Length: 308
Image 1 (cartoon, rainbow, N blue to C red):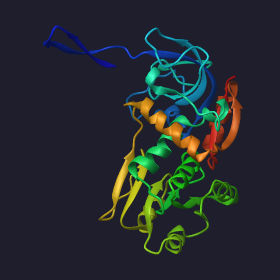
Image 2 (spheres, one colour; image 1 turned 45 degrees about the vertical axis):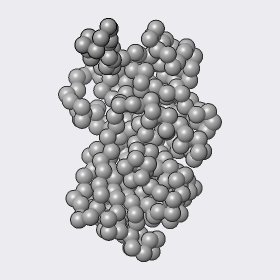
Image 3 (spheres, rainbow, N blue to C red; image 1 turned 90 degrees about the vertical axis):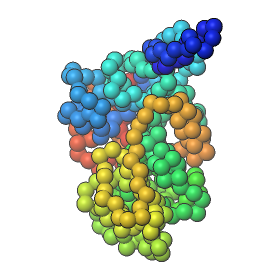
């Protein structure tokens, strides 16, 4: 954390780096994502991984300790948080220590501790895609590719809250039923039907924006569904080759002004009366089984570990 130190006269102004205030959270629920499985295998966008490593990028719980410089929280507050590359370990634990700037109270309702634990990383990513990068507007036609996953199920609701018409590309009868229940206007089974053909029935000139959350060869076909000058956004790890005139944004999690991002997320969660689909629950000692389920694929919503 940077701060300006000052004294008598402007010449004594200096910029110094100070430790970021930290909080200890008694973990209630930890989110389990595909990125956890990737990190388990050695992937890390932020540098080299040192094992042994406590996994878990996000979760919820209760403030167990707050440092003397922490002003926004007190003991017993219920919060949710995310933390990438935390040298003190992740959320697959009874307690986790994180920077205070990466912690926020969550809206109750519609969230409780269990569902809040599934939201931080996926919720911030979905909102970043829909609101910040795609800047979805009322009346626009939006396609969400990979809509039945942890990010997609939230992105549908955020797009609808902003007044958009949503075409959701999911997979399987269970996946298409889920996204329809969450408010998608048109639903396509991407494994059975041609979603590009469906797109031009949905929007005659193509959709205004696409959030790409799937993978494989179908990612490139998302470009064919865009109108001229349309916008496309995607998370790390998905990088389609663009056609001329397409505005493309890559989603990156950042800790800069994270508390402001949480405030924006909380407002949107309330407005959308957000539903958070839980694909499966496992106790902390069954984390290996949770990862086995991740590796099997076709996860509808988010898998969580119940710690308390």
